[in-house]
Length: 163
Image (cartoon, rainbow, N blue to C red; front, side, top):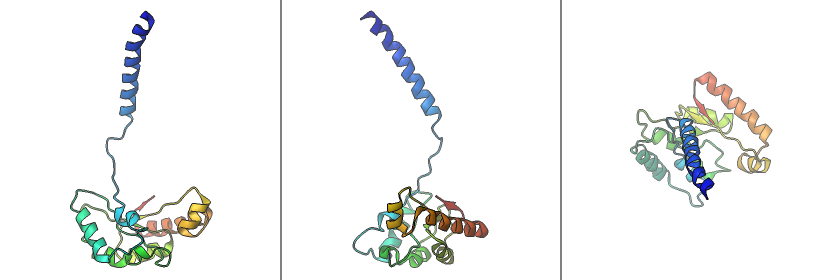
């Protein structure tokens, strides 16, 4: 019983030390990227009207967010919900200090995004062959090659890339 009473203060000191060192390694700032207008809407069964998407992004722009992923420049055949990407991108109110990146899984999407006024893009891959095939209709290796093309074009155009 006496040994356990002495062990408790040592445990508390150890936990405090662990907590302090863990907190010391935490970042001072966190970047929040709102992806709802893109990721949150892309799988909706019913088509969301373009004006509703534009209004949503404009309202999100009033919340203090600094990054709002606006849309995805993907094939309308594969993701009908994003068929209006150009109109959405060109119609949203661009608030100074807020970035509005768009998802571009390939060079064709990147070029369309830039033509629509995108000044930042996102690319994302997956570690699963099955998911990659279902998501962007190619293998992981093919997706990486597509991303290289996007990265090269983005660098040439001085367009930041997240992903």
